[in-house]
Amino acid sequence: MGEMISFATLERQRDLLRDRIDAAIARVLDHGQYIMGPEVAAFEIALAAFTQASHVVGCANGTDALTMVMMAEGIGPGDVVFVPAFSFVATAEAAAQLGATPYFVDVEEGSFNLDPASLGRAVEDAANGRFGRSRLVIPVDLFGQPADYTTIGSIAQAAGLTILSDAAQSVGGVADDRAVGTLAPWTTTSFFPSKPLGCYGDGGAVFCDTEEKAELLRSLRFHGKGSSKYDTVRVGLNSRLDTLQAAILIEKLTTLAPELERRQAIADRYSSALADIAEVPRVRAGARSAWAQYTLRIADRNAVAERCKAAGVPTAVYYPRPLHLLGGYEGYPVVPGGCPISERLCGEVLSLPMGGYLRDDEIDRVISVVRG
Image (cartoon, rainbow, N blue to C red; front, side, top):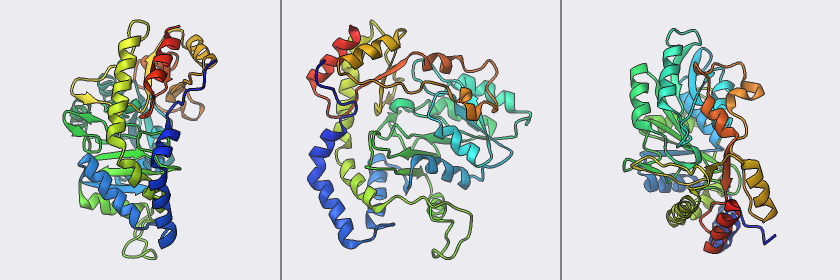
């Protein structure tokens, strides 16, 4: 067994940025504004400029970001929210916590993203109101690739649905010459440490297209405040992005562009070398993934994962069970015909090491071990 390869190379990024991050943290310690300090607004402005989004509002984590948007849209009991069955549970959890009904839709085999045809069947199934009022659809940009917002948008418009893009894994991605953060009326993301843009704890943000929406979000993240912290004008959350995390994110944002280029180069090498033994990810024409994960579909996944482990090559399974089969979500509606693609993917997907600082010799080793 050789030296263990880093799954996400975060420690190499940390070493590269250590002096700058130490200085950024020291500035926060010196001014002492640990909650909503100046770095929060500075990061929001910088991220909006990076993505060309109209507004960015930071919050405590990606799940809260989803919740804040649903609160802004008045989502609650009696409302239906369409979500893909192949995703992390937070996508459905945010709706369920507000008393809404998550309705599970299948995904595409090639992209892993929400299948517009399955969404169309789900919308038709729910049209008579037996599950409640159809209000929202949440495409998830899984593993970093933007969903098909053009086709989903047509379905949503016809059904009167609002689109909320769950971009927890896709900041830096592009579709049809538009960056993630500008592809839907609402977009949320996470700064969990392993994301392409991650902090050193929890963090999240919402991208939106009007100042009115941004002001509402700023109120919601701060207990529903109005003109002051003691002027509470609505029910809100305690979901502020910490100043220390914002300071760290400002520094990490400066290296995101070259890291995305490196992730693309790694994905290209993996796909070229492994396409004859596995189903490699397929990126839609006109789209560019942020490559949060590089995920294969492989029939003998468990055997390959064990071989990789023995050789010091880490792998991961995102996700081992579809959402509609999790114990906490079994009672919610599922698209007619079920979600067979989601169920199949859960038995076949395997994610390989991916990060902006993987070395060429490490990539060669991963490929060699996966090929056996």
